[in-house]
Length: 486
Image (tube, rainbow, N blue to C red; front, side, top):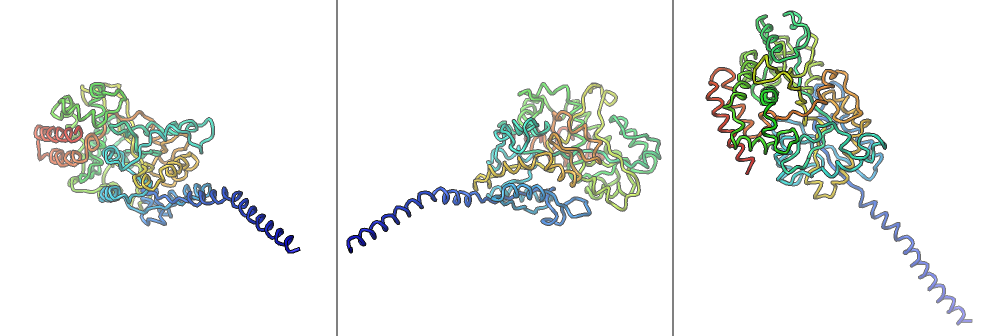
């Protein structure tokens, strides 16, 4: 009897062991799956810049009176679909110290995983290994796009031509550009009507004639800021594309129609592109002609000063960009209707060096508010794929659309998203071909851009002659070319 009991006990113990082992064997995949799920709980961070919600940054919205949602709805929709991913929004204002903050965080490996980036800087920084090349990701299907729609086979196909603009000298892209801010000229409709002008100018000569009539009526032709590069180089770069249009093939060694920093630096080194040449001399003369219609003291005026002058009705035109639209429209001091027009074409009526068939180009090309890069932080943390996946999700027309419309400052850089009705004037210009030449602050490097402002400023107000101006610009261009080519 005892033997039977003993054998039964042994069998029960063996059975328990077997069952225990079987349980462990059968549940091992579940534990592995749970472990994998736990591992997949990922947190990424993003600095959305102008699309920062006001809950994070009180100054978000650039003139908007209501609370700004910004990128929040996109993040909420993505996290609902991917509950294992948490996205943290970084609040950081864009100000004069922003480049220093970016450089410090990137160099120290503390930057957000996804970061707003200026195209110029992305190209300049390509050798520093701060940013992730996105070429291969653009060739992959966007899993959030319906079959047959742009982007379903190649993510790249979802974007307007601007996505390819900021290509570094090594042929890599580091920037996702899904919207575009547009350079424009705001004008005072009442002043235009008062001096007999019917609608917006279509050519450079018409704009100069309008400025002259406005000046003679007692108002200023342009409300201008001279203490930064924006207005000055937007206009000077526009002139470059007309004065040097016939020279494109001379400099464009890779035949892509866009003159990159290496190509322009090579042209400067070979002395085929010089500031002492007739094309640049005449271009600078037109820049000075434009400056002759600025308000007195414009060189010391900031953007806010120029905008205030325009809002108070003291100037007929204000060269600016679409992000200023909400601020201008919401300013209670403005008592007149605002019109907008794109930069006017320059033709042979201005110079015999310019033919009459030069097409207008998209000067906003490569600049936007949704211009994001994946940083070295994402590489270090292993979150590159998740960051790319989020950007694929965010660039769906139905996702990005509401954010762009709420912002009211940009036009879609992707197919399938409707334009802001207030920016209807620019729906054609965003689809123009890219401008072959960059502005003077982007053509070479940041050092040259500051030199351009310092050298041209005294010339524009008559304190330095043209010969001295082009001589100094040539000397700085040669130094910049050497830095780039090295």
